[in-house]
Length: 198
Image (spheres, rainbow, N blue to C red):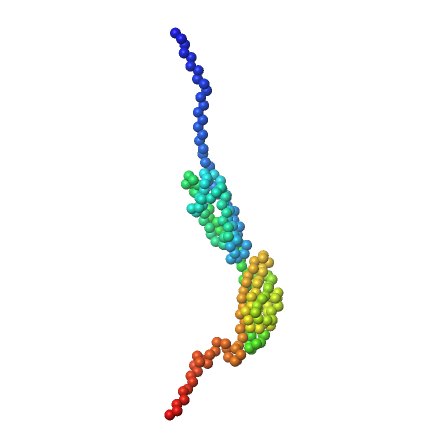
């Protein structure tokens, strides 16, 4: 009787099981540089989960999402991976406080005169000034103006943080007739009597 010897070579069965980490979000925000500007930014870095990722319905490449040109306000980002796991990031961008600017203007009192004025007051900061206009009498870098003729004047106000504010002032004057420019004798209760030849 012959002995049957069976030699089993080493048999290796390799099973690879992949477990994805739970998805997490790291966020960075950059607030707008000036009040009313839209240069804010939000950056979302994604770890864990399974690529590709979708943010608010938009599929992205890689693990980083950058939203730019943002103004102040609240933003919500719903991040979903390919396994339909999701995470939500809510961030608020904050506008800097604006300058509080008050401008008191005085119109010219006589036609062709130059006693118009503009008194500028900033209640919560300091700034520099640049005046332009189609009238005359302005001193370009002076805060207040006192010898203005009738016209349209623009003032560019730059705060110490570099934020720029633009204001427009219209200086009026009486009409050449001496009546207010809005006065029309035919519409101010004046009625001409008709003359009859009877």
